[in-house]
Amino acid sequence: MTTDVSLYERLGGSLAIRSVTEAFYRKVLADELLAPYFDDVDMDRQIAKQTAFLTMDLGGPNECSGRDLRAAHLGLPGLRDEHFDAVVAHLAGTLREFGVSEADIAAVGAVAESVRDDVLNR
Amino acid sequence: MLLTFDGRDYELRPGESVLEGMARHGVGIPAACRAGSCQACVVRSVAGDPGPDARRGLKATWLASGYFLACMARPSADLAVIQAGADIRTPARLAGVRELAPGVLGVRVRPERPLDYRPGQHVTLSNASGVTRIYSIANLPGETERAGLEFHVRVFRGGAMSGWLARAEPGAMLSVGSPAGECFYAPASRSAPLLLAGTGTGMAPLLAIARDALARRHAGPVALVHGAADPAGLYLGTRLPSGRAAPTAAVTWRTCCLTRGEDIADAVVGELARLAGQGAPVTAYLCGGPGSVRRMRRALFLAGMSLSDILADQFAAAA
Image 1 (cartoon, chains in turn cyan, yellow):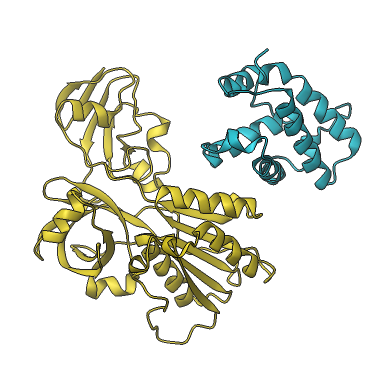
Image 2: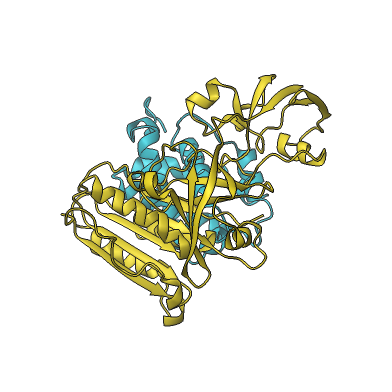
């Protein structure tokens, strides 16, 4: 993100992030590739984690580190690049629905890319 | 660490909750959910800090008096505690028990003092042997003065409280905890459609919420969905108890039975589709066993509802 004002702030801070997170999480749950990983997960805890991740990804007040992401995904069986790609695609699709520009979406994708190895425990 | 409880000193192990520590020393504190939700286990600190987790969700008046949740308190330094006073638990007597349906009791309890509650909230009931369970209140404040608090209680085989209630004589001593829970009528708008879906005796507090909403002149449509394993479990029928005036809101009530191959998660999504597009966003109230509440909540979320518009109250498994 090259602008002075972060995308997080332009999206309206924590309130809008909550609706973005819900829309994003809805896409993830509806994806057959990803849904099995969320079957036994408490939705409120998951929304809280996703909100922290999105806040970081959009350049908001940082509540989430690569180490957190590594710990959170450790022990999830069979997690591969295709899962990571699918999640990033859902995030891009969600932001597009909220009217975010392609340049900003690319910037968010780059931040997400920077934690790929943490998520996939490499 | 030293835990002083009602003036006597006990040793508390690191990481142990006040509730667990006292139980290890043979001192029972009334408790039910053990997860910081039901507020049955509140005690009062007179010296020391029980920590922020132990204060979460308690009302300001309690916090000001030093009350905290024994199940969530894992102190890191010495703590002195006294039992909750009479302002927390209200002595009560059993007023009557009748069978509403096979395996479901209608239990009336008369507290010594009136309780301030909103229909849909729950309380803990403790009997003289110290057995404590959480039950939702099934009637409205205007009715409890004469009839007492009413609860719909599923009788479990070997259930310590439900078994006791099935045999207890009117007049038996009980105590009632403070009403708790966020599942009650407080809509953003009086014209918002309400979707109330419950399984088994979980329908009782939802019916109370619906009647409360109508008594407060709720104007939006009200859709009730009652699910049960078999038709005998649909013990509430499908008609609201008659009120003073005909409700202005459109009230519908459908039932859902596993033996008829009907899934309550599908039914609530169908009702949501019918209610959405009627103007204001839908508010959903869900109550029942943890499995069905979780499935309904997930289905409504996937159908587009925000989690903040879904108020859920799931029954804790009996300890």
